[in-house]
Image (cartoon, rainbow, N blue to C red; front, side, top):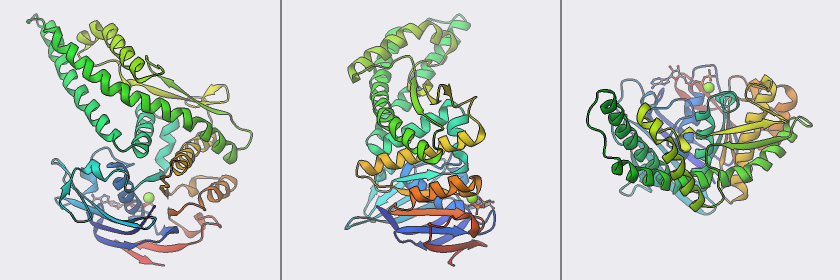
Amino acid sequence: MHVTHLSLADFRSYARAEVPLGPGVTAFLGPNGQGKTNLVEAVGYLATLGSHRVAADAPLVRSGALRAVVRAQVRQGEREQLVELELNPGKANRARINRSSQVRPRDVLGIVRTVLFAPEDLALVKGDPGERRRFVDELVTARAPRMAGVRSDYERVLKQRNSLLKSAAMARRHGGRAMDLSTLDVWDQHLARSGAELLAQRLDLLAVLGPLADKAYERLAPGGGPVAFEYRGPVVGASREELYTGLLAALGEARKQEIERGVTLVGPHRDDVLLRLGELPAKGYASHGESWSYALALRLAAYELLKSEGHEPVLILDDVFAELDARRRSRLAELVAPAEQVLVTAAVPEDVPEGLEGARFTVADGEVAPA
Ligand SMILES: Nc1ncnc2c1ncn2[C@@H]1O[C@H](COP(=O)(O)OP(=O)(O)OP(=O)(O)O)[C@@H](O)[C@H]1O
Ligand SMILES: [Mg+2]
């Protein structure tokens, strides 16, 4: 699939932007701070309902404006669709498909798919478990958009269970009435049910992604691997049923501690993925260059996976070439060049490797113009 037109209204630095796009490579060039990343961030938002740079929507709305609109015309084979998201920080976002009446934002998932490479990706390897969970869950959702619903169910149950545990912890500390634990049992079941579904999808994903990441790493940094993943959590079962009973049991074991601490201590929201490079964990051991290659390999593997499953995504390379040495630069360029659509940002044209020729836009003073 590819995006044939991107429209922005009050998104980031743009009051308005209209950007016609074609298949193949498009590069956005211009000095720092001119709005190149803002453009590709908008495309990424349509695919994930989130930004790769910030956790909340507020910074995405142009300063002084109340809401932002991101709209894209998307072509998938012969089919054309228009997707539109309206971002209303502090209120519910709205969505439309083909100008028809409102749908839920999560209903647009799956129309635009992206794999976005950015300088922030280094955190996948070096950062907190939350970075890796987000990577995994976004990819889980790109493969199966219905998982957005499962994830939001899980988050909702987790929040309610946490507030129950918090009041139980308070009551305990202040000698109040003990909580009726049967309520907690019900929440445990809800949490274990959506938790097991998410866990099953994560494990399935990692099983197929691992070999692809290993292959990608070998192409980027020959002889430097192997690369392998290990899921880190209290429950790693085979079937959904086993994961469910495993999670319930783990919650049971943790309950006393949870009531003391007032927070849910087990579940997919606490898990991590150990990224191995050779015999060692990448985090804490890999060099800067190795960590970079690892992060790129994760994104390339995500691309290969979605493509092999019939969901060729838009590849977005935000300012990544400037970070790489000449060899990895040209390797990466070779690997991404055949994709249906590649959007590249760079401050200087020399940072776009040969082999990624295509359309060019200059981005300056809030204007996006053909170069
Ligand atoms: N909500 C907002 N309202 C107004 N301006 C914003 C908003 N968010 C970001 N900006 C502005 O957008 C600019 C950054 O845009 P962007 O990150 O796209 O730059 P860039 O061209 O990618 O730069 P670089 O080459 O440094 O990566 C900054 O000047 C910032 O002040
Ligand atoms: Mg940028």
